[in-house]
Length: 69
Image 1 (cartoon, rainbow, N blue to C red):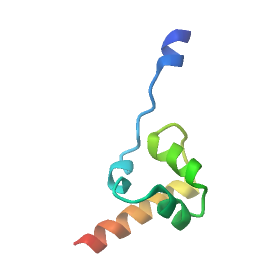
Image 2: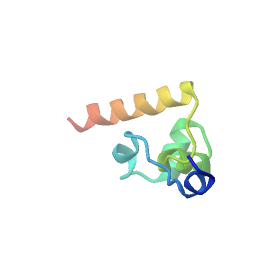
Image 3: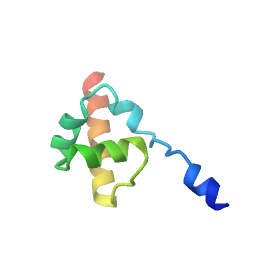
């Protein structure tokens, strides 16, 4: 990959981001115990979460899906 390609690459949102798009980033961040800006970067795909945080996000999504049934 060339330098131009690396710098032009757009972030790809993770699969769980679509399930959280209907909620305010501040509310999701507060529930996860992280800053809203870090939460926004994760949901945009610009920053990957740590393993523990990712498991919390996946659990949140699972809980939301269970509640919507």
